[in-house]
Length: 137
Length: 137
Length: 137
Length: 137
Image (cartoon, rainbow over all chains, first blue to last red):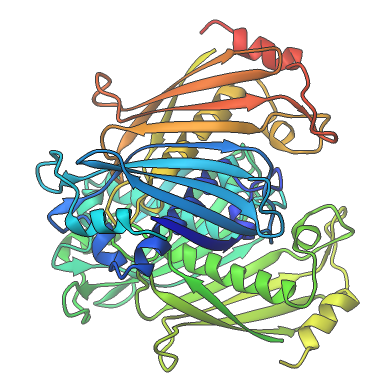
């Protein structure tokens, strides 16, 4: 699954050094993930609620920062999601300014595991999420 | 109900002008509200969930800013909560630097209404929240 | 000055009650303000920095909530800005779901004052901001 | 340098699944870093501004999540900072509930590099930050 997401940096995203606060870059990435799900018809409210049979929490995340991001910057986030085991998937994110798609501003990844929402034991990825992951872009 | 709450300003609270982003001052106030409930034994997870019979959403908020707040500032928030009708209560907040309790940095208020969580119709405030509101400090 | 701004609700905007955290609605409004400035050619990084001769801090804000906002909601924010004195302007915001422009989800306003960035004394609004405020939509 | 930091989870930190939004765990960690600097007398406003000769941006971060965090949880973050080259330092964070210091809820790390604030070229870590890093707890 590959997806392209656009996001403008807001003032609230920046910190007292005048650039995007580091943790907010992961928040931008999660927005790309949400948009990629919504584009395939997932109901985000159900998907991210903890009330269904299955939850897909993030169990790990990492991010590398190459260049600062400023208020008003138009970002393009390229997302690549892939199944990594029966129970898990990973998403890679590359963040660019739309005016310069040659040099990434940051790269990030998140790792997601499928759990039974009550017992919190591992479950096989649902067919819906497997279909989403294997979709050719 | 009166309560005193301490909060240190973090870097993530500030914006590109080097001061606390205006909306975050209301977030600080909500933290004071949470602490004032926890201090009286309310289970915050139940209280703020939407799964019980009753919810108490904020229906209005306002805030006035007198002086900027900076990273590392030690804030004291003085909270005063009072019942304003069978169905509603209001909370006033005064925010100071702990080193200078004579001049408020900001003042805010939030208005809360008691609703049936399913029908979203108005309900009388629960006895627990009435007791909390009428507690002398 | 009137402006229309679109914003999708992200998971990070919501709280443990499954709806947008109240203070974040003001953050959405500020995003509309930023977009309305950018649309007229303001350099947002300069405008919101505290390094120029002039700053335009928010001195008051208020917000009323009529209906909850959920992850994935497509919001339209209608902004109306007007000069209210030689030194001040106010912005009103009405927030709708794009699918239902008849009933506002929330309404908000922010009050901005023009200050000398060093002395923090009041200044007349700059000609640029006056032009922005008086622009017919 | 080792430091212990306490933080209560606020409602604003949680998301629609009723737990702390993943990126906010890194925000908590940064709060621990700020407190560890303040405890040694660093002026946080100067330190995190981009106006001095030197900046220390985060160039990488990662985080692993073992158990969810809920509103009202009292967290203890144990921070360990160490110099990793002439130009860089890393900080490891372990996040616990104060009631259960045997099992971490999450672990994170951040990597910081010393840069000339104008040229953005690498600089040797200042003596002040070296002293902070080598301080025995």
